[in-house]
Image (cartoon, rainbow, N blue to C red):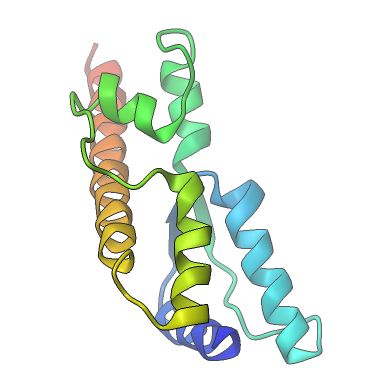
Length: 140
């Protein structure tokens, strides 16, 4: 399934210019590139060159002196004013996915998809709040 998933990533990103992630520049995107190269058997695996905006680095620039850390859930709590309840912990997601692949049981996948959807909402809100502060700095 991995090769098909990577082909879909390439298709979805083909006409994009910007990739926005959270810690993706150091972790996720290099891993995607490595897996893509492995399946392609060549250094040029067909992933487009994109402007990569890693919100973790922007969050650290903006809030590292104000918060205990810049983990996504810390930002969600202090910057977005939300605290997740009944959420699958991120550390349990790989095991939940492995169980799904092994058994075909989908019972935990709804929790995983919900967790990922909350992450996306939080990333959008962090980007908007970071930009609000930047705009306020420009007007001051």
